[in-house]
Length: 427
Image (tube, rainbow, N blue to C red; front, side, top):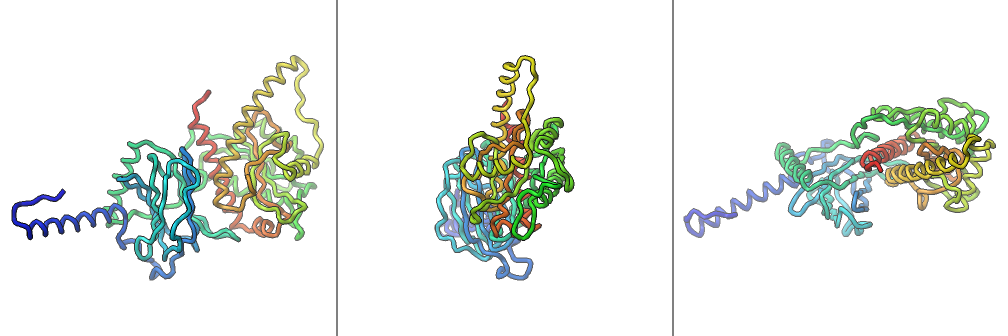
């Protein structure tokens, strides 16, 4: 509001002008729209990346912003009110995005805009349909045909919590001379906070020993690819401090499919992840996918993949006790149904984190009758990392930086899965 002290029209005009300027300064501080802190420390904005593309997907529970970048950069995130928004700033020379695509789906983000806020800073403003908070945010370096990216995940929150963050962000901006402090990428597998009891994750590197698995034309074997990914994923999950992690094999050892399943069951694993990289007769087929077990395969390709995996050793399946077989069958069937629900939740969580990071197959959550997923009491999923019959996938699977990009996404997916279980009320 503007107040008058009775000094006349000219005086009132000067007071109004001064108040207006003060309001602009305060608004600028809240929005982080001063140049302070945005100057490129390397000596100018010309060395900053461009924002190439933007997209937002939303549901009533969560939303995701992905910005494709010409290179990695710094970013800042601030919550704003009147109306409720979350603004994401990146250090950038600019963007060619005139009108970004509409929000895919309907949910907590109603619309968004991407604009050059000032030289050296591009702002993406997410208008919220409901109070939300940032669950995680991270920068992905460019790898292969995947550009550098900023990924920001939002989840629903209470109005009270959102208001508190608005006030805290305003105070932080003011303390930082009007600029939201730079944010740090969320560490993979840690964004949900500590779990009361550390779950056991068993990672199964497919094949091994006399069983090479699939082989690429250049002689690279599936057994070596899966072990490298498994070791890196184990290291990342252990470093998060949230999980106990075991491998079914730690070297070039042969295990039957039945032994792999038995290891997970005997140790009462909370999640079983089998890693693979197969081949197919059509070399254009490529991309990652995540499988749960179902006797009816999603399509012919999935049926062939499962048959190829299962043929590596012949097993008889579970031997049920001879006493009261009908009762045992019913109990096992009920248990299996519950585990398949959990397996599907895990598959969705991993796919959700893989999608911004790597090329995925169409409909990446898939079903097939993989024997290694047969445990009736352990949520089990199989991750197809890519195809050793596709040149682009072969090149990526042998790159350490691409492997790190994948295992970081898998670790985030594991965190999502257990956070979802923790947030779901027990029946």
